[in-house]
Image (tube, rainbow, N blue to C red; front, side, top):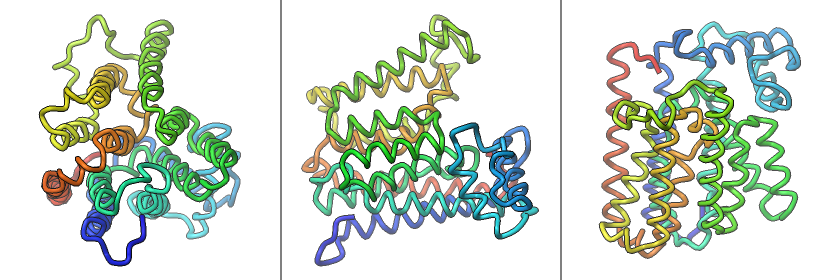
Length: 340
């Protein structure tokens, strides 16, 4: 985060919300009633970790962490397995989550080195508030490897950002070797970082069209076909974080958003994503992080610094309400076994 000669109020609030969100997500792990039917991936990682605890760095025999070339996550957990075997999946999830949240913390505190570089301290603080409160409570529960890959990718980009071509190549290689199904993030980062927003819009349209064609043609993924689509029956499959992000951005932009061509295109692409991701829910994993990270950064850049600062009161209220809602869900989850 950009240095100032004093502690900026908005940045301080952003830091506070970020700390609360991270702690909430870590505490939330202990409220979940893990079971094999709903948390199969979590159990796979747990079993793989315990295997590595008895067979240090024998990652070639561990099939639960993905396939070649995805070796970075099992390598990290193999180093972590020096702690020994664990009997409780919640303890394992908590410990492994600390690594992911360390990369998340580093990424969020230095995100201005990659994106929205011209924002003032106030705007960066407000942006951090939005990013912080929308961190999913179950971020590292079921898709821990994808979360790890996303924030490792961002961290490597930040660290190597001054080495122009090497930075893009090395960070992309790291992402592929962590979770190659997240390869679409390479294109999102390239177009957004270089402010090629029109190309980014076409990139998303290309992804949506490709998913619709490939899945409909090869029928490799069971889903409702577009022709038989019923929006209300598929509402449960909507990306709720994405929906919250879009509604928040609409409130910040104001009712005259349709006069802003760039923001209008942004909303159209967002509605397309909601439509296709509710039909093909696997799209939410393929475009991992779009619901609570990428959409916020892109939307805030389109809105612009001046409008963001003028909407300070709105953003403070929105982020406070979302944070209160998260804490309420966290408290309620401890009142009875909750299955994520």
